[in-house]
Image (cartoon, rainbow, N blue to C red; front, side, top):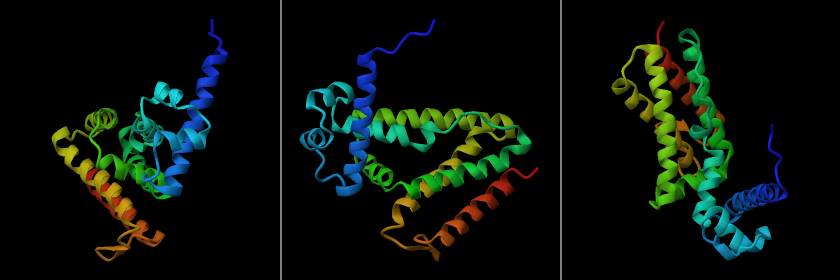
Length: 202
């Protein structure tokens, strides 16, 4: 028998959603400089007590926003069969690029994450690492490549995509590729596709 959601649970879901929307809006509009417990409470209309109760801190709220939008934590673990794997991987990296480029708030949060080492951020990194290793293990089983062979390649691709997307507003050109134009990213995607084709040549 399905358990009915109580009003309290519904209220908490609504409040958490309001806080997550607020933190995203604040980061987009003002960056991190003006974000504090009082500012979040004032803009969201949610008491500081509830912010602490639901997220532990403002940092916990920001980590929850990242977790909600993080590409690798939320990307499905299911993989196609071996014959469809190259197309699947090409699309996966293309989606990573599109998500990061279209979400300036998430880019700012990733920069914040790189400079933070609190327990909340460490937990977030552990979740991402666990999801990544599960995916790599399945790809290893499908392709016959060892984890020792796949891990460096996956690391180079995923890390370079994240770095270049965060760099594009500060460095419009990298190795002759215009990072501030769609044509430049099309060139990067085509390069990734070439690497995948060479690695997984049937």
